[in-house]
Length: 94
Figure 1: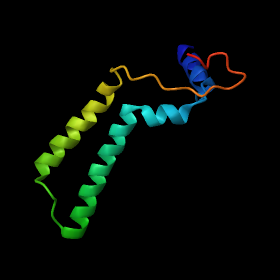
Figure 2: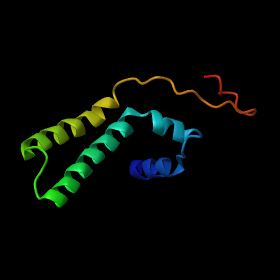
Figure 3: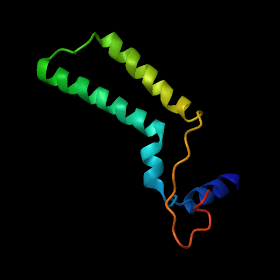
Figure 4: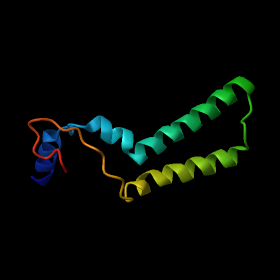
């Protein structure tokens, strides 16, 4: 029964109104994009030159450290995101 309640609650969740602002200010998103860029750069360089720009162990260590940092960044409080004021939003001043 608890599983069904959890699934129902998850399905009822909606995106927050200013999801784009949250997405732009989230450090976890920025770091994940940075990791993807590093991996993409390494893949393109390897595809073109058939050799990596650095020894593979350094790419493994960097990728592992950055990937480990993503969930840890969720624990660090981030700055408040400025919210857009709308005429019907009583919580816009928070």
